[in-house]
Image (cartoon, rainbow, N blue to C red):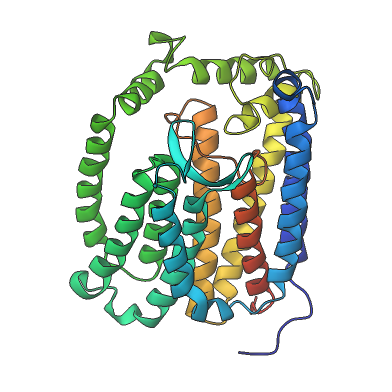
Length: 366
């Protein structure tokens, strides 16, 4: 490795902090009504988000100064720990149930979601494995099959909770990494067909997933049930117009849109800040993706390049799914909007991941 640069990608750092600041403002604005009603404190969610944001930023700056190739030697133990946590979370009485999924470990309101950390552990492990075994990736038996088998085991464990959204993001991210590393297109076509059949099977196996699909196609067929969230989200976005109704002036956050500070925070943002506000957020995410791709192209080794691809793909996939759900393009999945949505585990994990990306930028050749 060459000598480390004096500074990370400050433009990327600015984008991260800008999105995080917008997220803090919108978490308060979107949650004040719910927080006042449920906890008699309009700042309840905002204070917790601020706490996790501060902790996450501190760790981001620490990790930004740890050479990224050090994660190579820790990748296996990190993956094993995450698998153990995925087992523990399924134990009745240990794992906490929220929103119908046993996905949390912790005490009371302070808890972590192991599946979130599995995403990053899998990205680091795959970046190491693929960089060391690139010559075998064109072989289905020696390269693609062992890699995807590991990913699907993790996906199956996440589905036992069940958490289709997080599992889907992890699988999609890993597929992007495998494809970029040189896997054959014909293998992906074959596996894609199998994946579609498996996805259909997962949907059919759970009635609530079928309702989500039918409500996505026609939310007004069940306006008070499966289609409720999508309809209320559209009712938020529509009145926003070009300039929005004004910060803090949302109507949908007053008990129409459930938990507006989490998965549907972009709907509240569009309602209050309008098309212009939503466009600014999308431009910031676009710049984030561009800098991430630039860092991947300029990485000094294949491990760093694949690690960058994995991190930026994870962020991009979550953004596309979340906003797609909010505007009615995708069924409701329960995916948070990176850096904006309320959530301790997701926010902390995202900032940790971006800290790794910032360190890779310190060694970039571009």
